[in-house]
Length: 573
Ligand SMILES: *[C@@H]1O[C@H](CO)[C@@H](O)[C@H](O)[C@H]1NC(C)=O
Ligand SMILES: *[C@@H]1O[C@H](CO)[C@@H](O)[C@H](O)[C@H]1NC(C)=O
Ligand SMILES: *[C@@H]1O[C@H](CO)[C@@H](O)[C@H](O)[C@H]1NC(C)=O
Ligand SMILES: *[C@@H]1O[C@H](CO)[C@@H](O)[C@H](O)[C@H]1NC(C)=O
Ligand SMILES: *[C@@H]1O[C@H](CO)[C@@H](O)[C@H](O)[C@H]1NC(C)=O
Ligand SMILES: *[C@@H]1O[C@H](CO)[C@@H](O)[C@H](O)[C@H]1NC(C)=O
Ligand SMILES: *[C@@H]1O[C@H](CO)[C@@H](O)[C@H](O)[C@H]1NC(C)=O
Ligand SMILES: [Cu+2]
Image 1: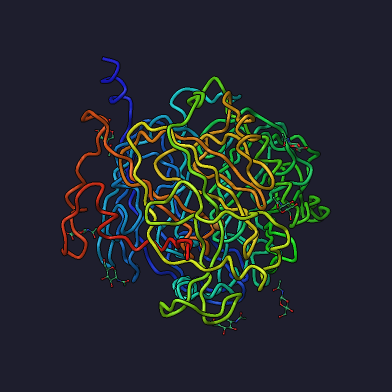
Image 2: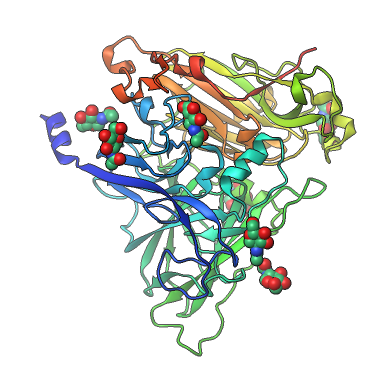
């Protein structure tokens, strides 16, 4: 009876996404939500339903959702439902050539989704290289019962993104050709550039705060390139969730959010009535690493009783240094899961992987040897230990976080050689898997937001420098580690995660910096079927059975037959 009641209580939410090409026309006046001024120029972008960001999908936990995607753009498209666990439903995960064939121009596809046991903020985005910069939106899952904190008076999605003057298909092509010199033209907050850019809407009002009320900000970082530090002058955040899992509430004046991450934070409108800037500042590794121009945008928070024509200028927050990566490290270390809502991790792992995240280079034209260290003879790639089977450890360990390797140059050329390979690893159903992601100083020293599809991971701890099993495994938090789908692996440090491989299917694990992904920082976990029908992956929907009507797909083997993943592997020669 309980099961029947649960089904009866859930609602089928239906959405239609019409993907189209829109030309944003420069204008200096804010006439409507869609006529946005973008840096005094016209750029052709692909968007859903004519909006940037796209529609926020809003559902209640346990709803069934059907999203009908009609592709009227000239590109092959898939839509990934970022962070949805997609239990027994990897077919709707939206990874081209891994779980489905892309939706070709003029074609359409219905994604059938369920959200069970997840509450908070997720998001959706195109899973075709750089097009996700304009094809994305929030995916809000409200609780069926109550929030584990006082009910907010209002909820506001805040999607941080990037605007590119460069055509996004061209950007993807440049990356495919080994060119990583492009950088975004502007940072956006809910698609708006704010008042720091030319030809932009002079002011973007983000809230109309009513004194004393509590607002739930649902923050999403949809950017291709940058982690962001977010502050609101005169206000503090109480972080209550991340990646659609509740965290033990903690107060902070700055939110650090990596690409692919989401953060739910309460803000009380308790400042003096007036106007306050909300600023999103892109963080980056300090010199001598290669630098990109500073990225920053701002919106204005206004109280209903404040801000008339002659009002004083908005108060600006004091932002951290864009190079102070400890802001991000501290923020992420302050997360722990809300114990009354989430389970403890299993006490021990069945399998342990040590994955060194690093760059390398491959010779152009498939040659065996070439000049490295930035020579045109080689292409820079990203690697994850990579062998065809994603081995347990890197083939050639080195002092991963040796500062002498910064900046990139001839002194690390010997570490560069790698090869292209597709990295996949089979996992037994129910296996408890530990992955230690070790960041390295080879070529650059970015944080890496590592995103696993189909599962949340417990972030046991993170630390600086080289992981030391004898010392660090003893410090694992097995009581209340936060549950995430994207773990930010700190620069010159490491993060250890644990997950239960209980969702049969083919699941992507990738870095959420788009240029790192395009350079090959991706691998596949193939989770085997369990012993019963209810632990086995059903057959794919009939419309998924063919790519170009060429070959029939077999569950769990789609990836192996049809991969175009470009994981690189360490050359052991
Ligand atoms: C507008 O875009 C074109 C083509 O990308 C470029 O040549 C031109 O410099 C841009 N103009 C401005 C004002 O940014
Ligand atoms: C779309 O993908 C198909 C393979 O599924 C390929 O043949 C075709 O060239 C692609 N079209 C575009 C516009 O990229
Ligand atoms: C979706 O595709 C089917 C089969 O190709 C077609 O019959 C139908 O008209 C399409 N629907 C829309 C809304 O484009
Ligand atoms: C989603 O849930 C509904 C109701 O429980 C069920 O009928 C449907 O098959 C589920 N869909 C998927 C894709 O799992
Ligand atoms: C705005 O335009 C002026 C004049 O063209 C230029 O000097 C300035 O650098 C531009 N500012 C930004 C932020 O692009
Ligand atoms: C939590 O954040 C504060 C700053 O808000 C920082 O001082 C502190 O070190 C952080 N705690 C941990 C465990 O990192
Ligand atoms: C690794 O490099 C760091 C920083 O350059 C250095 O402090 C440390 O001693 C090195 N460790 C080993 C084992 O060589
Ligand atoms: Cu990365």
